Length: 422
Image (cartoon, rainbow, N blue to C red):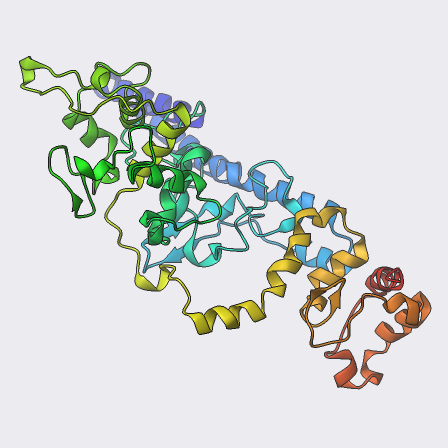
């Protein structure tokens, strides 16, 4: 709306210059002055009514409704409204996505609507280091939804934006950037099942039992009877349209639809055209299902030049390191409780949030450094536990492990929880 008003002001100034320059320059200068004031006003209004400001204000209010700790409430209330940015020169990432998506690493927002939802992959990915566009694409520097996603409200990519944000059913395209083993047989990765399905199909797990490399070259392996697919996903929409005939594609004529429909019925999409000296495809109809065709399309889009620095590429652990990693696997097991964090008693939430479980185990989950608290309620009642937390300095360090500083309310909550463990 503001953009249209600004455009109108500029048009009025242009018309005023054309018709008033030789007739009434005083009126023309007055129009210029008023226009400058209006433009300045609209700039201020646009800045203070920005979409991201509304999201941040809403997120702060949502946090205040969830939180009970008075000290944490003070911190939340003092949170400034500002633009947040992740910058990683090694990956070439400049992301302001978290300006709106502030709860990506907050498990208590796992059921919240977007853009306030906790990201299910937050435990496996360091978003603060690698950003968001490395997986999701989009325009990381933008601070408005439409520009950041590079898609219209109906999901259509905005014209001339080369790499719009992936739809959710295409995000796995980015997994091989760091997990290059996905292209290898028998390598499986949680969350990338669609990519492994497509890989297996290309390796011959299809009704015809034919490997794609019988005709195509992929990453230096295969024949040259058909186009080299090694950098298929690097093409922009414009580049793809210049090298492919789109008139046989039904519906939206774009790179995704051409690829998807080509897997469904190759002769229909590439029947040959003598007028432009295009030979008909030699690819047979494999009988791929819609699901397989979509997975293969995503796989094709993942075939790009990979410039990911070695330090970010995941490699299988050597045997000795696997053993060492297994020793701390209790962390993974314990964090499964985050799946229903909101439904846990306040005291148990505090037990998790304060990282007590790093040292103490309950029902076999947690650390082994401190005492097992599975049945602590049989030995100490709530009153005794409150006294324990109220005077941590009187307890030898080897018993308590570290100095605690709970508020009276927190002491009541965690004491009630531990006293219930019988």
